[in-house]
Image (cartoon, rainbow, N blue to C red; front, side, top):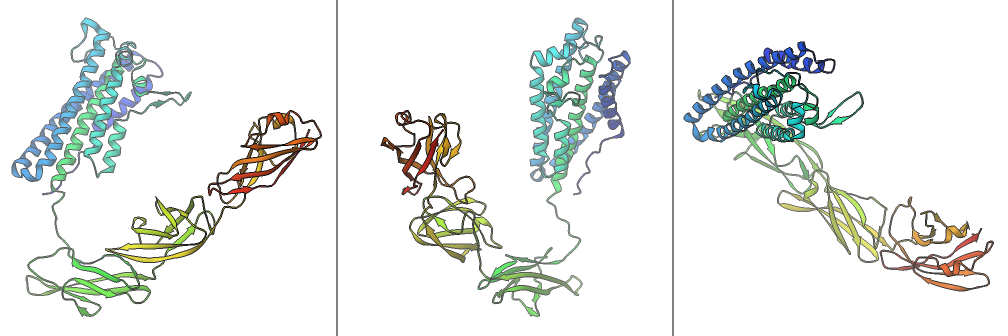
Length: 509
Protein backbone atom coordinates (compact mmCIF):
# COMPACT_ATOMS: atom_id res chain seq x y z
CA UNK A 1 0.00 0.00 0.00
CA UNK A 2 1.49 3.30 -0.94
CA UNK A 3 1.40 6.28 1.40
CA UNK A 4 -0.87 9.16 0.34
CA UNK A 5 0.66 12.59 -0.19
CA UNK A 6 -0.06 15.43 2.23
CA UNK A 7 -2.48 18.12 1.07
CA UNK A 8 -0.45 21.25 0.18
CA UNK A 9 -1.79 24.76 0.75
CA UNK A 10 -3.66 25.90 -2.35
CA UNK A 11 -3.00 29.16 -4.21
CA UNK A 12 -6.44 30.36 -3.13
CA UNK A 13 -5.59 29.73 0.55
CA UNK A 14 -2.29 31.61 0.19
CA UNK A 15 -4.13 34.56 -1.41
CA UNK A 16 -6.69 34.63 1.40
CA UNK A 17 -3.97 34.55 4.02
CA UNK A 18 -2.17 37.47 2.34
CA UNK A 19 -5.38 39.52 2.13
CA UNK A 20 -6.02 38.86 5.79
CA UNK A 21 -2.58 40.14 6.82
CA UNK A 22 -2.78 43.23 4.61
CA UNK A 23 -6.24 44.20 5.81
CA UNK A 24 -5.29 43.67 9.46
CA UNK A 25 -2.32 46.01 9.04
CA UNK A 26 -4.52 48.65 7.42
CA UNK A 27 -6.63 48.83 10.56
CA UNK A 28 -3.81 50.73 12.22
CA UNK A 29 -4.23 53.51 9.65
CA UNK A 30 -7.97 54.02 9.36
CA UNK A 31 -11.11 51.92 9.71
CA UNK A 32 -12.75 53.10 6.51
CA UNK A 33 -15.80 51.64 4.81
CA UNK A 34 -13.55 50.21 2.10
CA UNK A 35 -11.50 48.34 4.70
CA UNK A 36 -14.65 46.97 6.31
CA UNK A 37 -15.83 45.84 2.88
CA UNK A 38 -12.45 44.19 2.45
CA UNK A 39 -12.88 42.18 5.64
CA UNK A 40 -16.30 41.08 4.42
CA UNK A 41 -14.72 39.91 1.16
CA UNK A 42 -12.07 37.97 3.05
CA UNK A 43 -14.72 36.41 5.29
CA UNK A 44 -16.75 35.30 2.26
CA UNK A 45 -13.66 33.86 0.57
CA UNK A 46 -12.75 31.98 3.75
CA UNK A 47 -16.22 30.46 3.88
CA UNK A 48 -15.73 29.19 0.33
CA UNK A 49 -12.42 27.61 1.37
CA UNK A 50 -14.07 26.06 4.41
CA UNK A 51 -16.75 24.47 2.24
CA UNK A 52 -14.08 23.00 -0.03
CA UNK A 53 -12.09 21.72 2.94
CA UNK A 54 -15.16 20.07 4.46
CA UNK A 55 -15.87 18.26 1.19
CA UNK A 56 -12.23 17.13 1.02
CA UNK A 57 -12.32 15.97 4.65
CA UNK A 58 -15.50 14.01 4.05
CA UNK A 59 -13.72 12.15 1.24
CA UNK A 60 -10.71 11.49 3.47
CA UNK A 61 -12.85 9.98 6.21
CA UNK A 62 -14.66 7.83 3.65
CA UNK A 63 -11.32 6.57 2.28
CA UNK A 64 -10.18 5.88 5.82
CA UNK A 65 -13.34 3.89 6.52
CA UNK A 66 -12.84 1.87 3.33
CA UNK A 67 -9.31 0.99 4.44
CA UNK A 68 -10.68 -0.09 7.82
CA UNK A 69 -13.32 -2.28 6.21
CA UNK A 70 -10.57 -4.08 4.26
CA UNK A 71 -8.11 -4.45 7.13
CA UNK A 72 -9.61 -3.49 10.52
CA UNK A 73 -6.74 -4.88 12.61
CA UNK A 74 -4.16 -2.78 10.81
CA UNK A 75 -6.21 0.42 10.43
CA UNK A 76 -8.24 0.59 13.67
CA UNK A 77 -5.57 2.40 15.75
CA UNK A 78 -5.18 5.16 13.15
CA UNK A 79 -8.88 5.48 12.38
CA UNK A 80 -9.61 5.93 16.09
CA UNK A 81 -7.07 8.75 16.21
CA UNK A 82 -8.63 10.34 13.11
CA UNK A 83 -12.09 10.19 14.73
CA UNK A 84 -10.71 11.92 17.81
CA UNK A 85 -9.25 14.67 15.61
CA UNK A 86 -12.64 15.05 13.87
CA UNK A 87 -14.47 15.32 17.19
CA UNK A 88 -12.09 17.95 18.55
CA UNK A 89 -12.10 19.85 15.24
CA UNK A 90 -15.91 19.99 15.17
CA UNK A 91 -16.00 21.09 18.80
CA UNK A 92 -13.57 23.99 18.27
CA UNK A 93 -15.17 24.97 14.93
CA UNK A 94 -18.65 25.13 16.48
CA UNK A 95 -17.39 27.04 19.51
CA UNK A 96 -15.84 29.69 17.24
CA UNK A 97 -19.08 29.85 15.23
CA UNK A 98 -21.08 30.57 18.38
CA UNK A 99 -18.38 33.06 19.44
CA UNK A 100 -18.90 35.03 16.20
CA UNK A 101 -22.69 34.91 16.40
CA UNK A 102 -22.72 36.15 20.01
CA UNK A 103 -20.49 39.12 19.12
CA UNK A 104 -22.73 40.03 16.16
CA UNK A 105 -25.78 39.81 18.45
CA UNK A 106 -24.17 42.33 20.80
CA UNK A 107 -23.49 44.67 17.87
CA UNK A 108 -26.70 44.29 15.80
CA UNK A 109 -29.04 43.20 18.60
CA UNK A 110 -32.44 42.10 17.18
CA UNK A 111 -31.22 42.54 13.60
CA UNK A 112 -28.30 40.13 14.07
CA UNK A 113 -27.72 37.60 11.29
CA UNK A 114 -27.85 34.11 12.93
CA UNK A 115 -24.96 33.07 10.66
CA UNK A 116 -22.83 36.18 11.39
CA UNK A 117 -22.44 36.87 7.66
CA UNK A 118 -24.55 40.00 7.06
CA UNK A 119 -23.40 42.51 9.70
CA UNK A 120 -24.82 46.03 9.98
CA UNK A 121 -22.62 47.44 12.77
CA UNK A 122 -19.44 46.32 11.11
CA UNK A 123 -17.43 49.21 12.59
CA UNK A 124 -18.57 48.59 16.16
CA UNK A 125 -15.44 48.58 18.35
CA UNK A 126 -17.11 47.72 21.67
CA UNK A 127 -18.90 44.40 21.13
CA UNK A 128 -15.78 42.23 20.58
CA UNK A 129 -14.05 43.60 23.68
CA UNK A 130 -17.17 43.28 25.82
CA UNK A 131 -17.82 39.65 24.85
CA UNK A 132 -14.24 38.40 24.69
CA UNK A 133 -12.49 40.43 27.38
CA UNK A 134 -15.04 41.73 29.89
CA UNK A 135 -17.14 38.56 29.87
CA UNK A 136 -14.06 36.31 29.82
CA UNK A 137 -14.92 34.33 26.70
CA UNK A 138 -11.61 35.21 25.04
CA UNK A 139 -9.67 33.24 27.66
CA UNK A 140 -11.98 30.25 27.13
CA UNK A 141 -11.35 30.42 23.38
CA UNK A 142 -7.61 30.68 23.98
CA UNK A 143 -7.64 27.51 26.12
CA UNK A 144 -9.64 25.59 23.51
CA UNK A 145 -7.28 26.67 20.72
CA UNK A 146 -4.27 25.59 22.79
CA UNK A 147 -5.86 22.21 23.59
CA UNK A 148 -6.59 21.68 19.90
CA UNK A 149 -3.04 22.69 18.95
CA UNK A 150 -1.60 20.23 21.48
CA UNK A 151 -3.76 17.45 20.01
CA UNK A 152 -2.51 18.16 16.48
CA UNK A 153 1.11 18.20 17.68
CA UNK A 154 0.59 14.94 19.56
CA UNK A 155 -1.01 13.13 16.62
CA UNK A 156 1.78 14.37 14.30
CA UNK A 157 4.44 12.64 16.40
CA UNK A 158 7.49 11.92 14.27
CA UNK A 159 6.86 14.81 11.86
CA UNK A 160 8.64 17.84 13.33
CA UNK A 161 7.78 20.05 10.35
CA UNK A 162 4.06 19.57 10.89
CA UNK A 163 4.36 19.97 14.64
CA UNK A 164 6.12 23.30 14.19
CA UNK A 165 3.52 24.38 11.61
CA UNK A 166 0.58 23.70 13.96
CA UNK A 167 2.36 25.46 16.82
CA UNK A 168 2.59 28.59 14.66
CA UNK A 169 -0.89 28.42 13.07
CA UNK A 170 -2.55 28.17 16.49
CA UNK A 171 -0.08 30.42 18.28
CA UNK A 172 -1.62 32.17 21.31
CA UNK A 173 1.53 33.87 22.64
CA UNK A 174 1.25 37.46 23.90
CA UNK A 175 1.68 40.09 21.20
CA UNK A 176 4.55 42.60 21.42
CA UNK A 177 4.07 46.04 19.88
CA UNK A 178 7.34 47.36 18.45
CA UNK A 179 6.40 51.04 18.84
CA UNK A 180 6.50 51.07 22.61
CA UNK A 181 7.52 47.50 23.42
CA UNK A 182 4.21 46.81 25.17
CA UNK A 183 3.21 43.16 25.53
CA UNK A 184 -0.48 42.27 25.49
CA UNK A 185 -2.16 38.92 26.13
CA UNK A 186 -3.49 37.12 23.06
CA UNK A 187 -7.14 37.82 23.82
CA UNK A 188 -6.46 41.55 24.35
CA UNK A 189 -4.55 41.92 21.07
CA UNK A 190 -7.27 39.97 19.25
CA UNK A 191 -10.39 41.74 20.48
CA UNK A 192 -9.60 45.06 22.16
CA UNK A 193 -10.85 48.03 20.04
CA UNK A 194 -11.25 45.85 16.95
CA UNK A 195 -14.23 46.34 14.60
CA UNK A 196 -16.75 43.54 14.45
CA UNK A 197 -16.10 42.80 10.77
CA UNK A 198 -12.37 42.36 11.40
CA UNK A 199 -12.95 40.07 14.42
CA UNK A 200 -15.45 37.95 12.49
CA UNK A 201 -13.01 37.60 9.58
CA UNK A 202 -10.18 36.59 11.92
CA UNK A 203 -12.38 34.04 13.67
CA UNK A 204 -13.48 32.65 10.31
CA UNK A 205 -9.80 32.32 9.44
CA UNK A 206 -9.34 30.20 12.58
CA UNK A 207 -12.25 28.04 11.42
CA UNK A 208 -10.57 27.68 8.04
CA UNK A 209 -7.31 26.76 9.81
CA UNK A 210 -9.16 24.14 11.83
CA UNK A 211 -10.59 22.45 8.72
CA UNK A 212 -7.30 22.69 6.80
CA UNK A 213 -5.29 21.33 9.76
CA UNK A 214 -7.86 18.61 10.28
CA UNK A 215 -7.30 17.50 6.68
CA UNK A 216 -3.50 17.60 7.14
CA UNK A 217 -3.53 15.48 10.30
CA UNK A 218 -6.08 12.96 9.02
CA UNK A 219 -4.07 12.59 5.81
CA UNK A 220 -0.94 12.06 7.92
CA UNK A 221 -2.68 9.44 10.08
CA UNK A 222 -3.99 7.71 6.97
CA UNK A 223 -0.45 7.50 5.60
CA UNK A 224 0.68 5.77 8.81
CA UNK A 225 -1.48 2.73 8.08
CA UNK A 226 1.16 1.36 5.71
CA UNK A 227 4.28 2.81 7.31
CA UNK A 228 5.20 -0.62 8.72
CA UNK A 229 4.99 -2.34 5.32
CA UNK A 230 8.38 -3.31 3.97
CA UNK A 231 9.38 -3.23 0.32
CA UNK A 232 12.67 -4.77 -0.70
CA UNK A 233 14.48 -3.44 -3.74
CA UNK A 234 18.04 -3.96 -2.58
CA UNK A 235 19.90 -6.68 -0.73
CA UNK A 236 23.15 -5.95 1.04
CA UNK A 237 25.33 -7.55 3.68
CA UNK A 238 25.74 -5.78 7.00
CA UNK A 239 27.87 -6.30 10.11
CA UNK A 240 26.13 -5.71 13.44
CA UNK A 241 28.73 -5.68 16.25
CA UNK A 242 27.77 -5.73 19.90
CA UNK A 243 30.30 -2.93 20.24
CA UNK A 244 33.05 -1.41 18.12
CA UNK A 245 35.02 -0.75 21.31
CA UNK A 246 36.68 -3.85 22.79
CA UNK A 247 39.02 -4.03 25.78
CA UNK A 248 42.02 -6.35 25.79
CA UNK A 249 41.06 -9.67 27.32
CA UNK A 250 37.45 -9.39 26.15
CA UNK A 251 35.88 -10.66 22.86
CA UNK A 252 34.72 -8.84 19.77
CA UNK A 253 31.25 -10.10 18.81
CA UNK A 254 29.22 -9.24 15.70
CA UNK A 255 26.25 -10.50 13.67
CA UNK A 256 26.88 -10.92 9.91
CA UNK A 257 23.47 -10.75 8.21
CA UNK A 258 21.63 -9.77 5.07
CA UNK A 259 19.35 -6.78 5.21
CA UNK A 260 16.63 -8.88 3.51
CA UNK A 261 16.67 -12.61 4.14
CA UNK A 262 14.78 -15.49 2.59
CA UNK A 263 14.18 -17.81 5.54
CA UNK A 264 13.98 -20.84 3.25
CA UNK A 265 17.64 -20.41 2.29
CA UNK A 266 20.73 -20.47 4.53
CA UNK A 267 23.55 -18.21 3.25
CA UNK A 268 27.23 -19.02 3.54
CA UNK A 269 29.26 -16.47 5.49
CA UNK A 270 33.01 -16.01 4.97
CA UNK A 271 35.08 -13.74 7.24
CA UNK A 272 38.76 -12.99 6.63
CA UNK A 273 38.99 -16.02 4.34
CA UNK A 274 37.32 -18.53 6.69
CA UNK A 275 33.76 -19.85 6.60
CA UNK A 276 31.52 -19.50 9.65
CA UNK A 277 29.29 -22.29 10.89
CA UNK A 278 26.49 -19.74 11.33
CA UNK A 279 26.41 -15.95 11.27
CA UNK A 280 28.09 -15.20 14.64
CA UNK A 281 31.72 -14.07 14.37
CA UNK A 282 33.94 -13.95 17.45
CA UNK A 283 37.69 -13.43 17.79
CA UNK A 284 39.90 -12.85 20.82
CA UNK A 285 41.07 -9.27 21.40
CA UNK A 286 44.73 -9.86 22.27
CA UNK A 287 46.47 -6.81 20.82
CA UNK A 288 45.63 -3.15 21.31
CA UNK A 289 44.74 -1.00 18.27
CA UNK A 290 42.28 -0.70 15.36
CA UNK A 291 41.11 -3.93 13.75
CA UNK A 292 39.33 -4.65 10.46
CA UNK A 293 37.19 -7.51 9.29
CA UNK A 294 35.94 -8.21 5.78
CA UNK A 295 34.29 -11.03 3.92
CA UNK A 296 31.27 -11.97 1.88
CA UNK A 297 27.92 -13.71 2.08
CA UNK A 298 27.10 -16.21 -0.64
CA UNK A 299 23.53 -17.26 -1.36
CA UNK A 300 22.04 -19.17 -4.28
CA UNK A 301 19.31 -17.37 -6.21
CA UNK A 302 16.12 -18.83 -7.64
CA UNK A 303 17.88 -19.24 -10.98
CA UNK A 304 20.60 -21.40 -9.43
CA UNK A 305 23.31 -18.74 -9.65
CA UNK A 306 25.23 -17.85 -6.51
CA UNK A 307 24.92 -14.19 -5.45
CA UNK A 308 27.87 -12.70 -3.56
CA UNK A 309 27.41 -9.83 -1.05
CA UNK A 310 30.68 -8.36 0.28
CA UNK A 311 30.97 -6.58 3.64
CA UNK A 312 33.60 -4.80 5.72
CA UNK A 313 33.74 -3.32 9.20
CA UNK A 314 36.20 -2.25 11.89
CA UNK A 315 36.57 -2.11 15.65
CA UNK A 316 39.01 -0.84 18.25
CA UNK A 317 40.83 -2.86 20.93
CA UNK A 318 41.81 -0.73 23.93
CA UNK A 319 43.58 -1.19 27.24
CA UNK A 320 41.19 -1.05 30.19
CA UNK A 321 41.58 2.46 31.57
CA UNK A 322 39.71 5.09 33.47
CA UNK A 323 39.99 8.86 33.50
CA UNK A 324 39.78 10.34 36.99
CA UNK A 325 40.13 14.04 37.75
CA UNK A 326 39.67 15.68 41.13
CA UNK A 327 37.73 18.86 40.41
CA UNK A 328 38.96 20.60 43.54
CA UNK A 329 42.50 19.50 44.44
CA UNK A 330 45.04 16.73 43.94
CA UNK A 331 44.34 15.39 47.41
CA UNK A 332 41.15 14.56 49.27
CA UNK A 333 40.15 16.22 52.55
CA UNK A 334 38.22 14.82 55.45
CA UNK A 335 35.01 16.53 56.46
CA UNK A 336 34.04 18.05 53.08
CA UNK A 337 32.63 16.83 49.77
CA UNK A 338 35.44 16.06 47.30
CA UNK A 339 34.04 16.39 43.77
CA UNK A 340 35.26 14.03 41.05
CA UNK A 341 34.59 13.52 37.33
CA UNK A 342 35.10 9.88 36.34
CA UNK A 343 34.69 8.43 32.85
CA UNK A 344 35.78 5.40 30.84
CA UNK A 345 36.23 5.67 27.07
CA UNK A 346 33.56 3.70 25.25
CA UNK A 347 31.37 3.08 28.31
CA UNK A 348 28.28 5.12 29.17
CA UNK A 349 28.31 6.85 32.59
CA UNK A 350 25.37 4.74 33.80
CA UNK A 351 27.46 1.57 33.26
CA UNK A 352 30.33 2.80 35.46
CA UNK A 353 30.68 1.85 39.14
CA UNK A 354 33.05 3.64 41.54
CA UNK A 355 34.26 2.32 44.90
CA UNK A 356 36.48 4.01 47.49
CA UNK A 357 38.36 2.02 50.16
CA UNK A 358 38.16 3.88 53.43
CA UNK A 359 35.53 6.30 52.20
CA UNK A 360 32.04 6.75 50.75
CA UNK A 361 31.01 7.47 47.15
CA UNK A 362 27.82 9.30 46.15
CA UNK A 363 26.96 9.50 42.39
CA UNK A 364 25.62 12.87 41.24
CA UNK A 365 24.82 11.82 37.65
CA UNK A 366 26.53 12.38 34.27
CA UNK A 367 29.88 11.00 35.48
CA UNK A 368 30.05 13.24 38.57
CA UNK A 369 30.74 11.81 42.04
CA UNK A 370 31.11 13.10 45.59
CA UNK A 371 33.71 11.20 47.63
CA UNK A 372 34.16 11.54 51.39
CA UNK A 373 37.21 9.87 53.00
CA UNK A 374 36.54 8.27 56.37
CA UNK A 375 40.07 7.94 57.71
CA UNK A 376 43.48 9.59 57.53
CA UNK A 377 46.47 8.39 55.43
CA UNK A 378 45.36 7.00 52.04
CA UNK A 379 42.25 6.10 50.07
CA UNK A 380 42.07 4.02 46.87
CA UNK A 381 39.43 4.80 44.24
CA UNK A 382 38.53 1.87 41.96
CA UNK A 383 36.50 2.15 38.73
CA UNK A 384 34.52 -0.68 37.10
CA UNK A 385 32.73 -0.77 33.76
CA UNK A 386 29.81 -2.94 32.68
CA UNK A 387 30.33 -4.42 29.21
CA UNK A 388 27.49 -6.63 28.10
CA UNK A 389 26.70 -8.87 31.05
CA UNK A 390 30.14 -8.57 32.62
CA UNK A 391 31.65 -5.99 34.98
CA UNK A 392 35.36 -5.39 34.43
CA UNK A 393 37.92 -3.32 36.38
CA UNK A 394 38.86 -0.19 34.43
CA UNK A 395 41.55 1.22 36.70
CA UNK A 396 41.76 3.57 39.63
CA UNK A 397 44.08 5.68 41.73
CA UNK A 398 45.59 6.12 45.18
CA UNK A 399 44.89 9.43 46.96
CA UNK A 400 46.36 10.98 50.11
CA UNK A 401 43.83 11.91 52.77
CA UNK A 402 44.52 15.15 54.64
CA UNK A 403 42.79 17.14 57.31
CA UNK A 404 41.41 20.50 56.36
CA UNK A 405 44.01 23.29 56.45
CA UNK A 406 43.74 26.07 58.99
CA UNK A 407 41.41 28.93 57.90
CA UNK A 408 42.00 32.64 58.51
CA UNK A 409 40.23 34.61 61.22
CA UNK A 410 38.40 37.83 60.28
CA UNK A 411 36.34 40.54 61.94
CA UNK A 412 33.05 40.88 60.06
CA UNK A 413 31.40 44.27 60.57
CA UNK A 414 27.64 44.75 60.69
CA UNK A 415 27.93 45.97 57.08
CA UNK A 416 29.39 42.65 55.96
CA UNK A 417 33.00 43.82 55.42
CA UNK A 418 35.85 41.52 56.49
CA UNK A 419 38.95 42.83 58.25
CA UNK A 420 42.10 41.12 59.58
CA UNK A 421 42.81 43.90 62.01
CA UNK A 422 44.37 47.29 61.44
CA UNK A 423 42.75 50.65 62.12
CA UNK A 424 39.02 50.52 62.91
CA UNK A 425 36.48 52.82 64.56
CA UNK A 426 34.25 51.95 67.48
CA UNK A 427 31.23 52.18 65.17
CA UNK A 428 32.76 49.45 63.01
CA UNK A 429 33.43 47.22 66.01
CA UNK A 430 29.96 47.51 67.55
CA UNK A 431 27.84 44.63 66.32
CA UNK A 432 30.83 42.92 64.68
CA UNK A 433 31.36 39.15 64.84
CA UNK A 434 34.33 36.83 64.46
CA UNK A 435 34.36 34.54 61.42
CA UNK A 436 36.81 32.05 59.91
CA UNK A 437 37.12 31.03 56.25
CA UNK A 438 39.52 30.33 53.40
CA UNK A 439 38.38 33.37 51.44
CA UNK A 440 36.49 33.43 48.15
CA UNK A 441 39.54 32.70 45.99
CA UNK A 442 40.63 29.56 47.85
CA UNK A 443 40.85 26.25 45.94
CA UNK A 444 38.64 24.55 48.49
CA UNK A 445 35.69 25.84 50.47
CA UNK A 446 34.50 24.71 53.88
CA UNK A 447 32.31 26.23 56.57
CA UNK A 448 34.01 27.11 59.89
CA UNK A 449 32.50 28.50 63.08
CA UNK A 450 34.38 30.53 65.69
CA UNK A 451 33.66 29.01 69.09
CA UNK A 452 35.77 31.19 71.42
CA UNK A 453 38.33 34.00 71.65
CA UNK A 454 39.83 36.40 74.18
CA UNK A 455 39.59 40.23 74.10
CA UNK A 456 42.71 41.99 75.47
CA UNK A 457 43.43 45.72 76.03
CA UNK A 458 46.24 47.14 78.12
CA UNK A 459 44.96 48.23 81.55
CA UNK A 460 41.68 46.27 81.34
CA UNK A 461 41.01 42.77 82.60
CA UNK A 462 40.89 40.20 79.69
CA UNK A 463 37.43 39.15 78.50
CA UNK A 464 36.89 35.48 77.49
CA UNK A 465 34.16 35.19 74.85
CA UNK A 466 32.31 31.98 73.94
CA UNK A 467 30.71 32.42 70.54
CA UNK A 468 31.29 34.86 67.72
CA UNK A 469 30.11 38.31 68.90
CA UNK A 470 32.46 40.93 70.35
CA UNK A 471 31.48 41.70 73.95
CA UNK A 472 29.62 45.10 73.98
CA UNK A 473 30.46 45.78 77.65
CA UNK A 474 34.15 45.34 77.03
CA UNK A 475 34.03 47.57 73.93
CA UNK A 476 32.35 50.34 75.97
CA UNK A 477 35.49 50.60 78.14
CA UNK A 478 37.78 51.31 75.17
CA UNK A 479 39.14 54.69 74.10
CA UNK A 480 40.72 55.94 70.92
CA UNK A 481 44.37 55.09 70.40
CA UNK A 482 44.15 51.80 72.29
CA UNK A 483 45.15 48.46 70.72
CA UNK A 484 42.48 45.76 70.93
CA UNK A 485 43.94 42.27 70.70
CA UNK A 486 41.63 39.38 69.81
CA UNK A 487 43.69 36.32 70.76
CA UNK A 488 43.29 32.57 71.18
CA UNK A 489 40.73 32.49 68.39
CA UNK A 490 39.39 28.93 68.15
CA UNK A 491 37.25 27.73 65.22
CA UNK A 492 35.72 24.36 64.40
CA UNK A 493 35.29 23.05 60.83
CA UNK A 494 33.09 20.40 59.20
CA UNK A 495 35.59 17.73 60.28
CA UNK A 496 34.80 18.55 63.93
CA UNK A 497 38.40 19.57 64.77
CA UNK A 498 39.08 22.73 66.84
CA UNK A 499 41.89 24.88 65.43
CA UNK A 500 43.66 27.86 67.04
CA UNK A 501 43.81 30.70 64.51
CA UNK A 502 46.16 33.01 66.42
CA UNK A 503 45.38 36.67 67.07
CA UNK A 504 44.12 39.87 65.41
CA UNK A 505 45.29 43.37 66.48
CA UNK A 506 42.97 46.36 66.00
CA UNK A 507 44.07 49.99 66.37
CA UNK A 508 41.11 52.06 67.65
CA UNK A 509 40.44 55.33 65.81
